[in-house]
Length: 491
Image (spheres, helix red, strand yellow):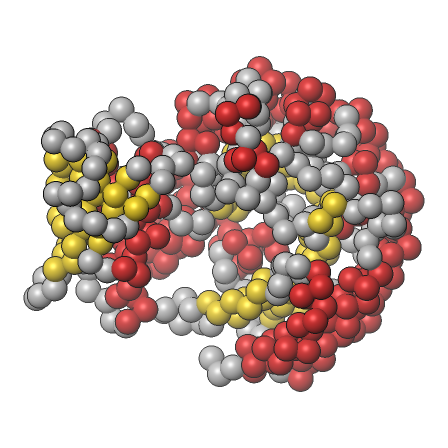
């Protein structure tokens, strides 16, 4: 048990993120007092004044050495930015206390625990210049130089994509939260489809929501920049259902923008007929996700396909006419070694897709893997980092460059997920969504609509749809009202 004592209750989750980055699945208690806390304990207090600061203390055991660090809180012009600076100072102070207590543990992203380090780098570069943003990452946030350089490189690649976004443009997301099987590591809000396939009542509700969204967008003067159909696995739909869904969306919105992506992640859900249906519907980019090309691993993690199925699906996609294919792989899957990762990446090289996304395994709270964590051997932090490096080397050998990145909680080695693409083959939606640069109008159970407001505060307002299918269907009238309010709100 770990004790964390804060005099600002609203920041307890931020402090806990830093502690768990070092201590993994530690159970954290937020009550009690410093002297009475048993074992491992941390304390942080905010001190106001002309020059406010955060002071943090920590120890790994009662009676053991105590580390302390004080961090100044940078001034901010608004309440929202002031809160960000307070969180930042707290995380840095706790990180440096933990680093002093555990010097052998290295976190490549330092005190950064957020999902979007590139968004932060861009904001700093815009305000301070690129060189100073790099300095802040390395010296203030303790990010390792190679990770800071990766963030800078991605921000540079993204610049023309983001500069191409026009006022009153939005991206569409259409969610099919159903899969053929549930992966061991999955924490998504998706259901396993039975023999009857995706329920018709869900599709009827989705059709209605798409029509409602299109009407709201038109009344508000919004235009579609690009569209992404995700899940789950959208290709659990039949070829006819896919054609009908995409035709409905295009008819309602009057077009689906400059880019239309459909996740076709499971090879056991696609065939030549579905690929032709997607091509006919105007889909220009798909994602075929092996995760691993090792048969034993696929069986272990609950994938209902084989490496041969991936090869078959990839060939059919090319034959149908797809010239922009993404493949996902995961570093650190249960039971996998560096050699397993090498074999997977060698297969990717032979196939030569236009995009490669290298994920790092994240042990999510709601996954079956978390429930049975002791039953599966997992890569160490150092092994996971070497696997991720192999992915980067493979992408470079294929002529790709990194173009988007995000991080998740409970990732092996506190690493990152990176998308690589050949020049001109980047997924615009991925950039827009991860950088929170464009408003997202989302349809489907568990989908997240986001209104992005321009300006220095970088304010984003979110509207989640219920994950439960029945609750989603019941809430459709209210969702329409809330989306109208969001899209018509003054900037």
